[in-house]
Image (cartoon, rainbow, N blue to C red; front, top):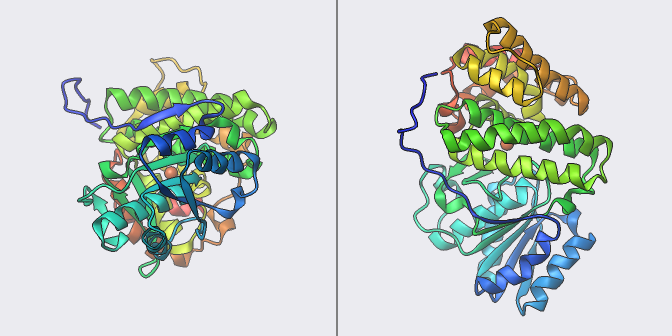
Length: 389
Ligand SMILES: [Fe+2]
C-alpha cells in the first residue's frame, strides 16, 4: 500500500443524524419538518408490536402524517421486493420514506426511493454514481448496531435472476436523516448482536486498510474498532446494558461513516458473493471470513494492521517484527470472535468445495474488491475461501 499524503483530495459525506436515547421518537417531528403528508414506512415484521415501534408510529400520526406500512421484505432484500415497494409508494400516493430496521429494510427503502423518482428498475443503478435523480426524503431508524445503512452511500440488493448481490453506491443513497437510538437494540438476540457487531468491525477494518482511506475516515475507523472491542462482548453477556448498546451503536455509526467514504475490501466482496449465490447472513459471513482475509492482505499494509491490533487492545511495540504484527492482529480478531461466540467455518453454513468456482467469480467482480489493499487473483480468493471452510 502506498503512503497517502494529507494533500490528497478526499471527499467526505455524512447525513444529518441524531444519536442517543429517544432519537427514534423524533421520527414524527422529522417527517413534519420534511413536509411529508404520507410516508411509506418500510420495516420488517419482527419490530411490529414492540413499544418503541408503536411510539414511532404514534409520533408520525400525531404529526398529522399518514404512515403506509410496507414490511414484505426478506433479509438480503430482493430486487422484486424493491419494485413492489415502489409500486406501493406510487399507489398510496406517498411523498417520503421512513425505514425502521436493520440493513435489509434500509437498503430496500433506498432502492424504492430511487426507483420512484427515476422511473426505472432498481438493477439499472448497479455500480458507482449511476443514480440521476435523488429519491424522496428518507429518514432511517437503525435497529441493529451493524449495517450502518443509515449513514452510508451504499445499498445492497439481491439480483434474483443472476443470484448476485449488487451494490448501488451514490451520494443519492445517503439518507436525509438518521435517528440513531441505542435503546431500540436492547432486545436484539445474542447471535444477531454478535453477527451485526462483527459486520461493523469488518466495516471499520476494511475502511482503515482501503486504498481509498483518508485522514477523516481513519479517525472514524480506528475509534470504531476501539468502541466495538470494548462494548461488543458486554452487549452479548449483558444484553440489557444500555451503555454497552450505546457503545456498539456509536462504534457502528463511526464504522459506517468510515466505510461509506473509504469503501470496503475483500471480506465484503466475498460475503456479497455468499449472500447472492447462497442467501447466507451477511454479518456471519463477514465474521467467518475476516481473519482469513487479514492473513492474506497483511503484507500489503502491515503497519495499518498493527494499528488495528492496538485499537483492538493489544500491546504492540512499534519495533515489533512483521511476523509479530501479523500474529498479534490475527490473535486479537480471533479472540474477539471467540468471545462473542462466532465459531466454526463456512462449511457449517452449507458451503462446499463445489460452490467455490461461482463464489470466486462473483467475488472478483464485486465493486468492494477494487479498494482492497491487495489485488487478488482467482486462486488467491479460492485459497481464502478454502481456509474459511
Ligand atoms: Fe457489511
